[in-house]
Image (cartoon, rainbow, N blue to C red; front, top):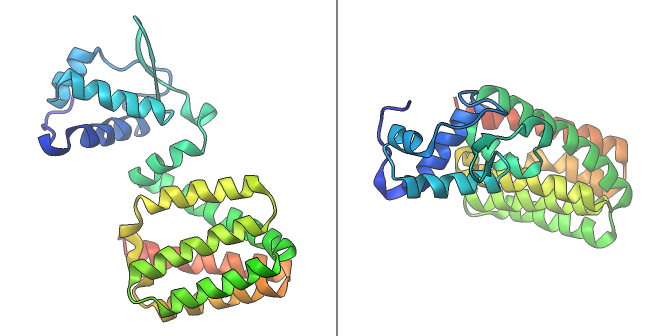
Length: 231
């Protein structure tokens, strides 16, 4: 059992993180039951009330399930989980999860860009140009980063397929929870805008294959920049 106590000022948040990491690392594998509440609370040096709150949050996220009179079991989250788990996977940022998330970012992003180039409306193309200008003119990295995120939401909407929109929203919403760790990629807003230029040009030009290639190149380049700053 864990030996170090959890800070009292953020006890539930910290406990959620510790339990999440213990589940995703395999300490408590899918299908297994957590230890009895009294034992688990003592191991983390928290009250049973705090433990209950943490378990409820992890159950809402789809990682755990509680059966009255039986106990709390780890769900088979790899088989049954959905986009609601992405924020937790991103927060864990283990090497394996990180690699898989960036792979999906590249592959789904390229597909979505191609669909958007073929289906975007004039209003959506104008909005993309406007947002690219906001990235370039941003006064700080955080503002540029948020404008870039909005670009991806518009691209997803431009596909005309709401499911693509939900997928991109899930990835972005997960990313936003840890975006402070990647702000360095937008430290030079003009350079960030330059990296976007080929993608925006292909999208606004309606060239699906060029947009796919530009998106793949953009995500590959920005991935390297983002990861370099986290080593």
